[in-house]
Amino acid sequence: MRLKLKESQRLIEDAMIFSCKGKRCGSNQNMKKIVAIIILLMFNIGAYADVQNNAQSDDACYVLLEAETGKFLVEKNSDMVMPIGTLTKLMTQLIVAENIENGKITLDTLVTASSNVFGMKGASIWLAAGEQMSVKDLLKASIIGNANDATAALAENIGGNQQKFLDLMNTRAAELNMKNTIFTDCTGLDSGNISTAIDIGLLSRELVKHKILTPFMTTWRDFIRDDTKQSTNAKSEIPKTQAELLTEPSTNQRAIEFQKSTSRTEIVNENTLVKSFSGITGLKAGRAGDTFNLVLSAERDSKTYIAVVLNTDKDERFSRGKELINSGFANYTVMNPYFSSEFLKPVKVKKGIETAVEIEPLELQSLLVSRGNADEITTEIFLPEYINAPVKKGQKIGIVAFYINDTLLYETPLITKNSIEVFTYKKAFFKLLESILS
Image (tube, rainbow, N blue to C red; front, side, top):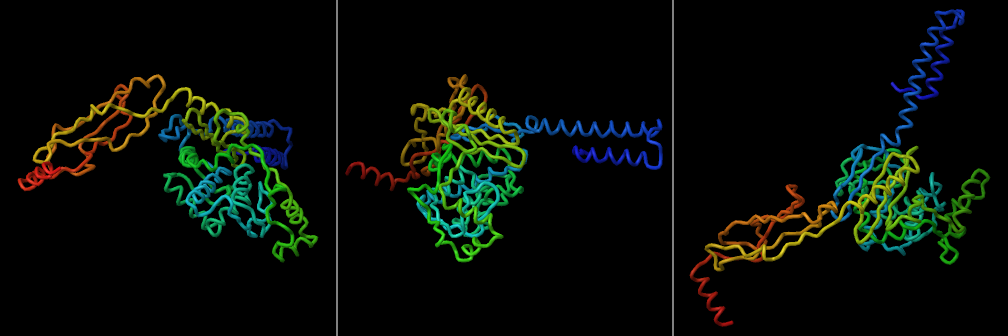
């Protein structure tokens, strides 16, 4: 059993009191007992301190993945379930982006803050109940300023209330195959939000597809409630009950928050890499309790890599994230598989009104390979000598596979380009007649 420092100190004191009660503490026997107890407990204290000091390096969780292929390249403790804290907002922001791109809301849509978001703990922009703000400014506040009240206001606007939005979050997580993720609120304030580095990688891969978020995620410092674009927050428009509350001596803190809500508000990004890291496209620097997290993405030469770093210290998350991203660009490349059409010669068809059918690959996905192996990709095609009619368009009749040495990188079915019916004299006559007339 691990004992914390204060607990161990208390036990030492209790042990000394117990050993000396009714006896002379200076006796050799009692002093030996005390020394033994102290040594045992001090060992426990040292062990606990070692665990605390090593938490950042030994228990750090991270992954590196390439966004286009979704391939994970580097993993450490990648499936260890951890509290994710403020990274929870990434799912909220994904759902907001999807609603914008689906036309359900726009960046200009005005959102009215409810009394539920007024006075939320943690980072906030001091939204007042009844205050209206655009989706754009709320997104800025959520992404750049990590504002809990802005995030909750967006969630309520889309879901109707925060609980219904939470259902959307967990449903979306299941759709993205985030098997070890549970969301318990939309902001990360609740300590029950848990996930893994792999799951956050899957979420991040989906997020980088939504370019509408990139300008916010790559901004270090901005303002909302700018003088030139005042939000609707005049005191006369506050619900009567809140206006009355502001006059009561017992609500001085609310009055202070309301005064803040009516003035220009600065928001600053915790992800300081947005100021200097080459090709950065996001996504978020966060924290969970006493530990720090980072999701870093960067695009260079039209290729994007994503690093997820969980359960580390404030500075190591940045150094580790940069190291992972840079190693991705330095050591890997994405290639589009290609082979000449002469490799896909028509396949003979027996008993059909035509003697051969053309073929094509069902799909060709990009391949992620080490830069040193880029020229060593080989292609193998597996096809029958012939097939029998009838032949349906899109029928799978073979496979094309791509290898590096003996390692299979990717394979996809080969399918027929058109249909061929079974030969009959009647069909042959009409086909001949058609060819003559044409």
